[in-house]
Length: 569
Image (tube, rainbow, N blue to C red; front, side):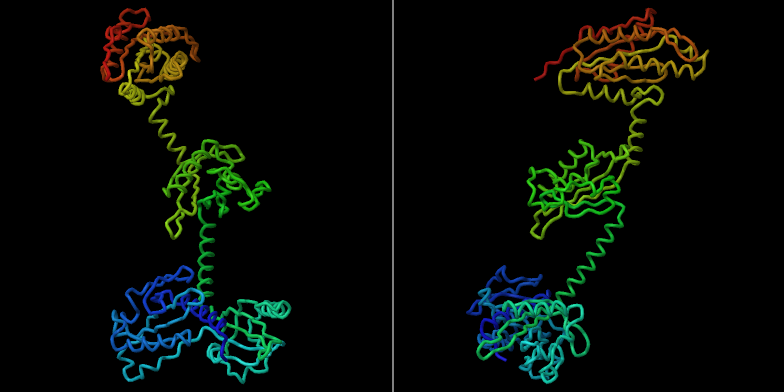
């Protein structure tokens, strides 16, 4: 059967698409009408094929095969699609199959496709090089009457499915269609007859050997037309595409099962911060539920107006148990991932419905398109509450005295050193406190009584200190108060007087009443003028002066009374 030009153009285009889909390892190039290589337009869908480089195809084949290229080029004008076997200069010992396809009607180019072959050239030396092995057809046609009885078929159909014309004529081919696809085939046939419009269906047809092949079927109604009066059935073999889709579906199912089995929660967001995917583990970790989502969350994203940079309601609902600070930290990290493509890890606090504070590690990673642009983000959520609590406990033990709750020696001295290294003119004060009659209580009442007394003293020191100040225990019954940003020595001395007064009040404890008194020394310095050891030594010396006086009154060291001032430029 011959085909009209418009249908022949469509046939060639479908054949080219099938060829490219099945052979992603092919070499391709576009050709102008004069045979020179030109860029392939984006309208031609490629599947990762490499480009043929050079000025013309004839330049990349061995000299003895260039006549074949010329012959194929002359034939493509009338036949629209031709095939030949040639050898490339890059690998002259192997045959390759070359296709010329005329796509000028739809894409304004001719397409050259070169398929690799495993056949060695010397294996075919005795064969007629002009006789090419027949290429398996990927496009064929049937003609049927109004009742779907076969009137005829082309040779390609016989080659694709193995039936002879005699086995088909006068018979219905419905039984050659897979049982699961017969319903769609009948619906398409009825729609084609009733609407007189072309109908397209993808279904499986049986070969004579019993195997099945996926085909795109187009029904064209030429009934009651002069010299036609039939239905033209066009078939394109799409088995390679369907195999790829099935493999992709298998990989997607594997990925889905893996994500559901992961111990981490997963949340995928697009550039509009809408939810693309989340697994069940996310809801378990954060103790949220999609059942609680408001009705508007189920609307398409386009139906909602969102503030730029904000989560959609559905995303916000999934993360609703995050604290306000946690949500702010997550959104800030997400912004950087989406805008800059920089991966982020952030720990956030959340409070589940049962009210117990917990912490999650959210690892946010950019999802990149083939162009390199950020197309969204995937967030892995892991409950790290236990490790966070352990870390906090370690930090607490490294910072605070286990008995009194004051800063321990290294912590308070570290804080003092940081204050003295500030690059401004702030004044720093140190109040050094030593209990005068602690040892008798400890010796007579026991260590438990002594510990109780130290706890009481620490609490009194915190009472007289400002919110910005720190109280530390140096060891034994010695304490130090770090005074930040004081106005001058007199302000530090006032704090020291309150300390001496409050500590000297009787202490009513479980073992009875204890009379207390403290020796208190005060030293001050401007940041950047004094080393930490020197300042603490001065406060200690002033404390010993107070102890020698024996009256429980604080003493300001002499250097603090006339401080050295730096001239800063």
